[in-house]
Image (cartoon, rainbow, N blue to C red; front, side):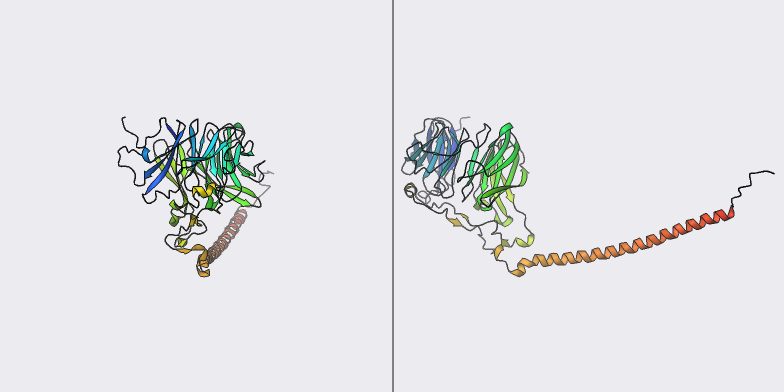
Length: 422
């Protein structure tokens, strides 16, 4: 077709893209920030209208930022989770670069042994973790390694298989998760401790397959959801942090409908419907459709009038950076994101229920149990009475059979000499 692209600013195909979680400068204009990485070795950052386009081609290049420095295809993009205007790019030239988008300058360049295939920021945005193509995992503070090759090698070989892996930091902790392939194409997830990363603290075997699982970590509930390209199955594990280790507990497997998964992304927690205890919502790209996969926790009907604060603690606030790009580059620390409550309807908290409300279910259950036990005792009594009557009839039948047998003997006496003649 002759259809024009709505966004046209690269000379070669776009191979990666990423939306910014916030954009302070253009918030009044109701615009969002989108970064695109291309096979032409460049990255562009666009300011897009929140209301979308009218359908006609729009020249957005005038308001875009062009970032150059890589000499191969830019395959990974990631905005900083807490600082505004900080963008991380990784390319096949074995480098990872951190940019100040607003000032259009490069803040750091990290050289690696192989090209990164995945990366993630830690909870407070002070360290960057990278999964390299050769299985090595690096953990770096880009501000301390702004101009050199001094990246820190945390894991020499995360997985024995040859497939590119995936990585995710496990919330506000020193643990991170890697997903890859072991020997004989057995897929696995490993959990590592940054303080002693010579050996994993937990390994989850996920069965054989050709695609590596992509982990989506739900920080508020310590749950990880795993989806793989080309498959319908999703796996859910709870990660229990206890006694300086992490234990993975398999929760369930789910089957997606229709077409296999091509790509997936976890929506922010504030997109979940708390009224039905929806703890996660994943947008899944299939061959010709985009659908949503919802994960809900079943709760009793009498608890629906309460807010499940045990499932929904305060979560990251939308669109509010904690640091500016300059503050982060100067090394200013923060404890984490600004948070907000998901109790938008101001319901009574489940943890603040009165003793009467807490025990209402127990009282109802006790009454129901007592009723059940009474009915069971009555049924057992009737059963005993029926058995007693049945036993009486059985004894009477046996006595009658014996009497009939004796009568037959009296009417036909046994004469042993009747067959002998004189």
